[in-house]
Image 1 (cartoon, rainbow, N blue to C red):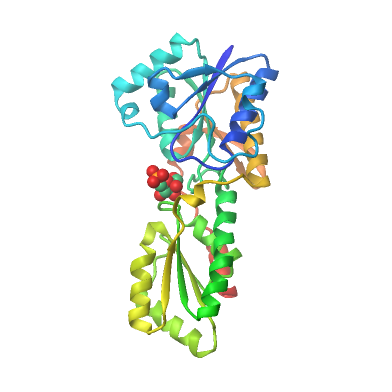
Image 2 (cartoon, rainbow, N blue to C red):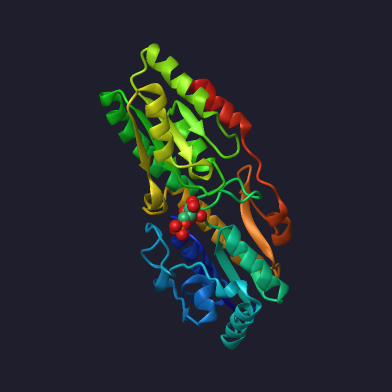
Length: 318
Ligand code: F6P
């Protein structure tokens, strides 16, 4: 294997740049030629390929977003699109491809593997929704962004003695809500994995108010509903003022945390090692603090384990 390429795909995540840097610099140290593909699979189809040098990835470890840009490609979902992509890889003499992204991006890599392209996946998504790895790049930074918002909302909710409902991202995975809710001392954490009873929630808010609680902070995962509707219901049923805050894409930006930079560096390094070892169709991850790699089919077939213990702790401490 002589030439490898790297792309970022799907929703961006803080730490993707650190992963690109790790892939590029590790590969150059190992005497590979390295190419960067812009705009994910869409750019691959269009031949948006550029050479990467050590200095191309200078001064990016601290930056959010992705210098390679990212996209969600409908064309790549078609056989015709994927054939075009393989044609571009062949044209540029690319022998191995590192894909940094989430579930959808990995499914793309899986398809390319079936077409005899050597692929390695690096998990990059704020959602932390990939079952085979304890953490994905970007999750820690996103949780810290949410935590900062929760701290601020707590100040104003206490002053006004209000209920505050904060809606966070994560698609169908409640990890961002669970981790930020526990760390932020939220009174209630509402997750798609658990569900909730709206009437009981309102009764608990009244009970807590009667006991003298000055505010009630609710962290709501986007996968189970909208903050606006819930805040309206709470205000109507309890008579207590309630406000909704949807954090939105703020959660996707910002300088990556130390944890995300280190995770990205380890993942990038291991991805190139795997290609060097001739291993393909694999994804890298972290389990119990150790960097692991798994077959891409096996990884995508796993079901995400919900951390009940963490949820119970959050409830016990609320
Ligand atoms: O997958 C990352 C994510 O930020 C999800 O948490 C969210 O549901 C989605 O992407 C938003 O997508 P878009 O940026 O296309 O609006």
